Image 1 (cartoon, one colour):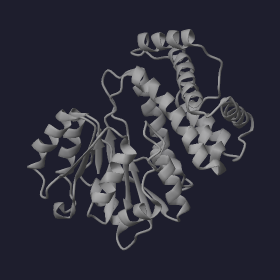
Image 2: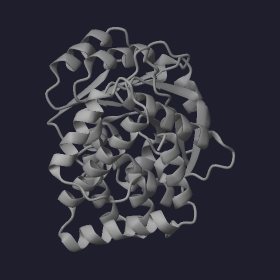
Image 3: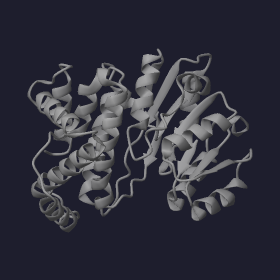
Image 4: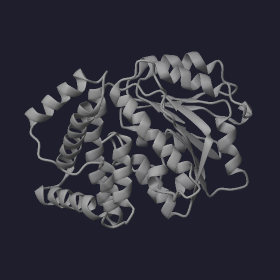
Length: 333
């Protein structure tokens, strides 16, 4: 199942990788959900469909976000197991087989695959730092000591029995922007008793191609999404707010605009100065998103205060502060 909002170039490679799997193609149904107007992506699907053993299921919807797109796919899918991919995840030839073997004779597993970020010859700083951070996440998940978390449920490369997705209600339709719809569903699947299994050999190469400004603005979207997440699951507020990486810092529009200019100017070089300025810009965008989504100043201040306390003591979970520190180190901060 692949939702797409127009990345035709990478979608072509994703579909191509699915036509070269070691898994029996007669047992595979490919479903592409076109989220909004995406004529180029639709053309790619039509072009690639002739290579499929079975018809490619194509679903169209008004632009509504990945969670709602995947809900359409869940309702229309006919297979027992649903593998979720992003439209920029290129699969190794045995990815389907690696997922499938964990589901044989069972309906209680969530299987997460590896998502290494593709390395580029001329790699911008924000992608280089993201790749370093994500490699650390994959290493942690592959550890025998790793404790499953809702953070493991990344819909770029994860498989779940369709019946269990239906049981928990699928993705929450309140998440219409970027981010957290996957984590929130992962939390409900864990709470429903499903067992999370990480399969490092199920590799999906992440062809990350986001401009630095788009990358920064996604932090604002995640801030808005975290407010929704907290309202739905206040029992894990501390863990949700630890996802931000950064506590609240004073900022104004002029300072953020200046930081964005520095991030753009130095993005090909990176380095310590770039990381510090990028950290400020990320934090400012994130907390701007939180403020926009908060009901009022009281709710906003309570989240700011909680995040400050997490920084000091890891409130709510002894490992939270340590995890934040590890994530910041991976970003070179």
